[in-house]
Length: 118
Image (cartoon, rainbow, N blue to C red; front, side, top):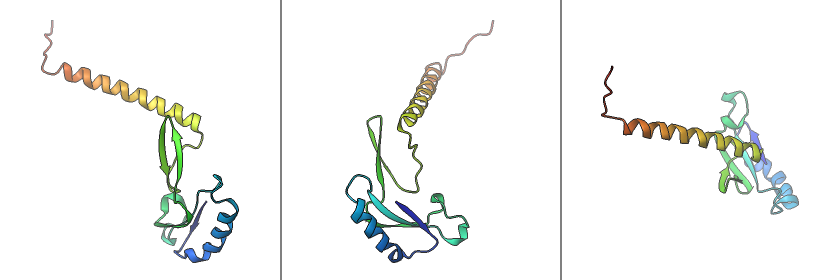
């Protein structure tokens, strides 16, 4: 759970974090309770405006698995939560990278060859 506040006062959220942790901590449902601080200068409290974070209980990230890789995802990170869709997206990027790599390899093999215009 990621609480976003406008100031760094984690002691205000600690009692709530303790209750949540006692109920769901260690069950696999809840891995951590985090207080992210988005200062008022940002006007919109949002994950991308987080100045700092305080882990109140558990850990400050969750682990997501995708195609045999394990990612540590923090509350301020973006991660496609629909894993099957993320795997499709990863495949598209992988295929595009393979094509670009093949194109670059082909171009480097042809360096230094001058074609004659006929």
